[in-house]
Length: 290
Image (cartoon, rainbow, N blue to C red; front, side, top):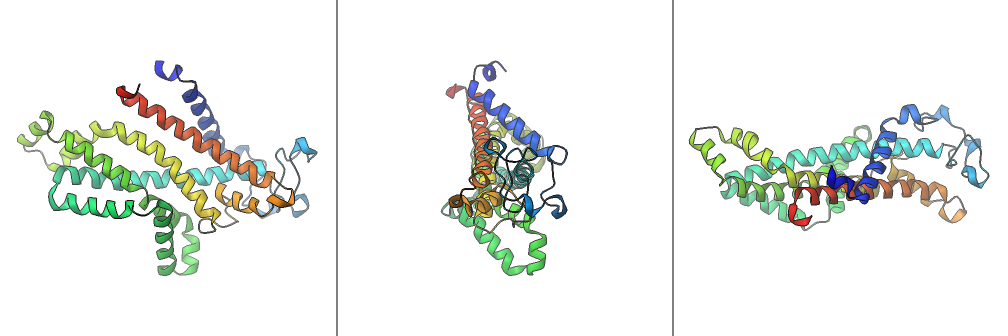
């Protein structure tokens, strides 16, 4: 806590993150309208500018081309982006840490196989991996089923593109921990390897993993925004932040700047705040960097 008070950047980042995440979580109670409900907005209210540019007092940040309140759209969009980001990060954490700890503890051919798969994936940018997985899902699943499972498919695609960092870090940390006395004592006592990995090794390698979780949460949110911006992610009737930015690009040169720039600034603020918190955690958990 003392180090936190001494870091203005961390305090500001925490405040911004708490405000944005809290507002997104409470979107159904804070937002003026529901952007998913077609009956809650009117085309007659489309393209209204923000209040300070002479817009309608009912819409603080203006409206988009469909007449949706920008505040409501951004809050619901952030809610959906955070849901996908957190779910993808959690899935990547479970998959990557499980494979990394097992590879580091077991070693041998299993370790070599896991690391070669990780090396192959590291040769591909995360966005290409996500696009590949989404494309495979589109080819396997019927169109109606894929549309219904779009959020799940997108979450899986992002998770499978981010697990490598967790696996490599967990493996390296496990190599260090498995030779320590407390692990050797557990082996001599005849404890099952799975119990040793979960009860003894995993709690002692959580420090660096927490930093990666924070950074990868920002990466997952950006990946979702990128995929939605390219039209691969969520459709226009499920406006995540990436979808809102894609919609806003259509009106950038026609003067309706707020449709693009407001969700963009919201996304930038969220990602920067999460990254700053990740930097603070790294410094906190590594005394050499203080």
